[in-house]
Length: 106
Image (cartoon, rainbow, N blue to C red; front, side):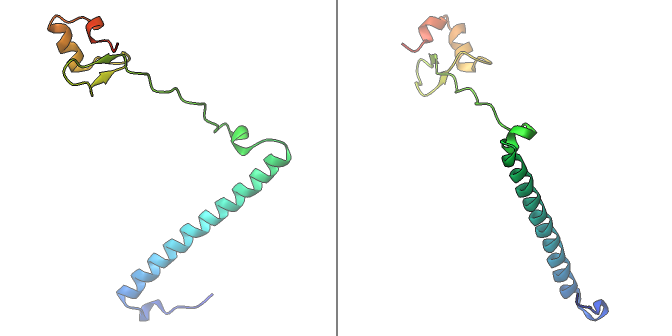
């Protein structure tokens, strides 16, 4: 390892060195983690598993978004699936004596 006379360096040089050291530390940790992950994945594969199966990180398929069931009477771009909180336009339409059936997408 090189010996540095830190007292002889300017503030700019010291800050650059500090930045370079922080970057070297971060990349070192990333390399170590990648190497460890590769080793663990190899062991899991040898045992017939994936790493995700062993650590429980496999994601279950998410539900597809619900299809629109209701449409705004004047602006067809506004729709609602009927799930969750009622949009204000739906509430306003019901208050204006429309029924949910009137707003259904046919």
